[in-house]
Each structure stands twice: as C-alpha cells, then as structure tokens.
Length: 469
Length: 58
Image 1 (spheres, chains in turn purple, red):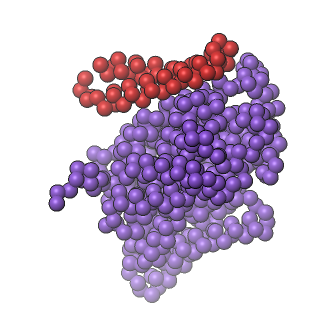
Image 2 (tube, each protein chain N blue to C red):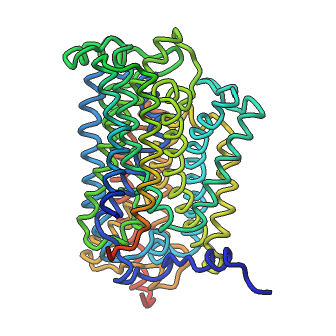
Image 3 (cartoon, each protein chain N blue to C red):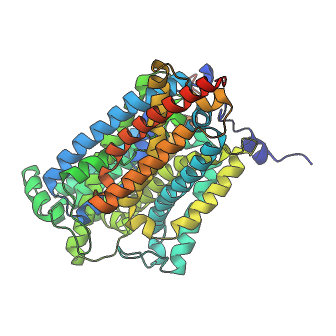
C-alpha cells in the first residue's frame, strides 16, 4: 500500500543524530535568537516568577540576583557549550557515546529523557490552566500534588496531544513556531504587567520601586514556603538551564550554528524570559495575592486572563507549547540515541505520551524550582566530562573519546565521575544542609576532577597492560 | 505585498503592547486594553504567517 503523504513527511525528518550537521544545514543568528527567546519566554516563566514571590524574594534580591545570574548563564553557553558544538557538530548523545560508552550513554539517555518528560510535562500543565478557563475548571493550588478533577486531566491531555504532534515534525517546525510566537509573547508579558500596575498602586514610574518592595517582592514568604535570598535568585538564574549549557544538552541545538559565538543568542532568552517575563509574571501573581487575600490557588492561565483577557490566556497556552516542543524533541533525541533505527517521529510520539501523563500531576508545577535545580544537577556531570575530554584530556597525553577508541561499552572514569558527584551532592544536602540550588557549582568541580583523575589511572593502566587505545 | 504584510504585523505587535501604557496613564480601561490586545494578537499571527510563508524573491 502506498504510504500516506503524512507518513512520508514524518519519515523525511532527518536530524543528523549520528553524523555532523552538514555545512548547508547550518543556521543563522535569527534561528537561534528566535529559538532561545521563544524557549525561555515560556510556560515555566508563568510559574517561576510567581514562585519567587511565594518564596519571599525581596525586590533588590530579585533585580540584581537575576541580572548577575542570567549573565553567568549566557557566559556558560558562549564559552562552554557553543565552542564544542560548532567544532564537533554532533549531538550530546553521540559525543557521550564516544566518551562514556554505549551502555553508560544508554543509562544517561534514559535519565535525561525522563527529566525532559517531566520538564515538558510541567509546561503542558501550565498551558492546561489556560485551556480550562472557559470550562470553569477547578484549578490546582500550591499544595496539590495529585490531579484534582477530571476536567484537569482532560485539559492536560488535549494540550499534550497537540504539543506532541507538532514536536513529531522535528526541529524545523519547532523553530518556525518559536520564531513566530516569540516577539508577541514577550510583549504580552510586558503589557499584562504594565496594565495592572495601577491596581497595585503604581500611578507613575517613580512609584514602582516602593510598590515593588511593599506589595510585590515583599521579602516575606507565603505560609509553608522557604525564604529565598539574593544567592538563591542568582544561583537559580545561573543554573535553571544548567543541563543545557554546563550540562551540554544544547550541543544538539548549537551544532547547527554557523559560528561559536552564536551562543550569545541565549541572552535573548535570559534577559527577555528569565528577567522581564519573571518580573512580569511576579507582578501578576502579586496582584492576584492582593485581591484574593493570599489564596493558595496557583494557576497561571486565570492570572494572565485576569490581566490581559483572551490574549493573556492564549499567551499561557502558546508559551507552554514553545518550551514543551523543543523539550519533547530533545527527549526524543535522547531515546533515539539508544536505538538509532527507531524513527524520530515514533520516539517523539512515545515521549509525548509519557510527558502528557506526567503533566496531569500538579506537583510538577508546584515544586518546579526544586525540580529544575535537581534536573540540572543530575545531568550536569556529563557536561563537565565532555568539556574535560575535549580540552584537557588530550593535553594530559591521554586519549579523548576513550570508550570509542578502546571499544569499551562503559568508560569507568565517566561512571565514577557521575556517581561521585551525585553522591557528594547528596551528602552535602543531607548532612550539611546545602540547598539543592547551590550544589551545581561544587558539583561541577567534583565531576571534572574525578573524571581527570580516574581517566589518568585507567588509561595509564591500559597502556601498561599493552591494550591498544 | 510582503512589505505591507510586515507593516500590518508590526501594527499587530504595537496593538498588543502600547494600549497597556494607556491603561497605566489612565487613558483607557483595562477591558479596552484586553480587546485591543486580542485584535493585535490575531493581526500578528495571521499577517506574520503570510509574510513568512511568502516566496522570498519579491
């Protein structure tokens, strides 16, 4: 039987999973600016901004903590991820297979895909709060962990299905959609916040700072929420996408960049999304808290609808899409690296289904700050390993891509580095009270050093035994 | 044609953003702003899709 046009189109999606991206497929600035601005002006921004308010961040800590944290994040993309991406032109998963070995990469890919599913799930959940508005759906609250109504589950599945279908068509479609929505989305964030400022008592620009301190970022956390300081904000701003920059997941995206310095386009996402949009959504949530007398309901859709009407609700839906799409796509790549013969669209469909099921649990949204910090921490050690393998290992007279050159399925040095980093991080958190938001920095040094030390030991031993490497 | 569509697109974006500042100054109501934002949104998405899909030879 002749294949349908639809299926032919799906099977034509080629993403160079195991070959370098060819010269003719490289993309210019606009692709990346659009991609980053769209991806980081997203559904999560409607959650993170309000959660800062709930955690009692002060106005000063927010403004300056984010300014510095975002700058550090951009530097991480430009100087750590982007140069390797444009030199190798390979996905994170394929690079890791060469360095860590097929079996270890398989474990990493499973963990990675699961994390991406949860992250995309939280964005689908955010979109669902907007989809449910016309149906007077019962919205989740800050303390909800499980689905609270059938309406909620139906809304989540509707959003999840559409998001998955778009992601099944690959990076080009995602990029086009993000490019189209990005400029409009950031304007909706800004407009919604500006329009409600008078209701918070801001009638001139000179009023803003005082109202910001007294009514928006008051420095007092809501009941049951921990207190966030300048350091929480700064490290969160830096590490919220740790898996992408320091963790090197964006090798898969930036390998399409013509030049290494295109990594600076991440700044569009950081300062539009993780600065302006976080502030804007914080302002909207502060108004909701003021009007509701401190209600525990936590639903970005109705909050945006209250401030900007149908355009606000659409923004929440589309913002969720533009982040969930590339995240599902990345999760698909992670799984496809396990079995390269699987069709990209089929893997994406499975990933989208898992993501949608996860999205039905509001806990993903309510504990989003902790989740993204954990997700970055778990995946980050592999980024440190790739960086060391690319630059330092050859200078030590050792072999890069050791698993490939030695024919091993598991590079013990990588396994030790990963396990030791996570174990030490766990101990620091459990016994020394170091919060999860601060573990990424010491974790990176532990991962890098342990990889170098164990690599030296293993490769030296192999040479002594006469094993060709 | 593309130039006209681009101008329409930017009018859409302007309608999404600028009325909010009129609410801030007390010139228009919040409800009027919501309507203008919706018009701006529809204008942006329709016109932007059209000029992005149009052949680049023009």
